[in-house]
Length: 285
Ligand code: DHB
Ligand code: FE
Image (cartoon, rainbow, N blue to C red; front, side):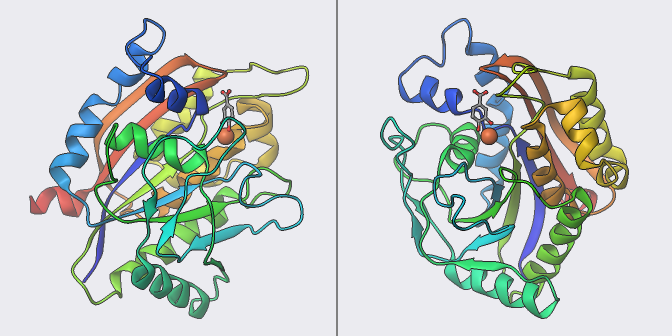
């Protein structure tokens, strides 16, 4: 059967992509950020997942106010990197896994989790920056990637609890896929940041680290964080963190921490990064 063996959580700051694409990743400002992902890159290169499910958010690139799916699953054979205003990032196209994606869509809908199916979608920094951080600069991504877009841009976003339960339903879907596939799920976006209005530039390291603690040891506590608390504590864009709960919901209750990293600043955003393995998968190694 297919199995989700681990989750990687990471921020998606667009300036990280620019730094990498323009050869500034070893500048004094960026070196500590990229250093925080070195062991993650080694870990995933050794793990060699067959498929990545990347839970991310679109930033008015593929979807805008005309169409706002709360959860949208990319079922296409490929997804082109989008032009976000300065041209598309010079990164490979994202190759999907239509068979697994359609299977997940069917399982979710029959499980009464009505997902939007997307067969044509461009992907922005929300998806390509996490891929770059985990896989580095490459001619092609090392495995197929299934994008799962979550609306965290236009109110109302889903609750953390709904995201966590979606993760559980995705796990059930993956485990009913007949082929032997090693799947890693990415939860992306966050951590605390606010790009607009009076509190622009807000970073809350105390909240971010508490959130990382909760993901490791008490994810259910994180599912109880309300929209208002995210807004107050982690800024208007900190709500992106609900996407981390989709990935966390797809894991066992008990997990092993492989890697944890936190760094401020990166552009306007606190960068957080965590890798969790299912305790059952770690024990089987
Ligand atoms: C920044 C962060 C984001 O999450 C984003 O989508 C755009 C910009 C920033 O820190 O500049
Ligand atoms: Fe963002």
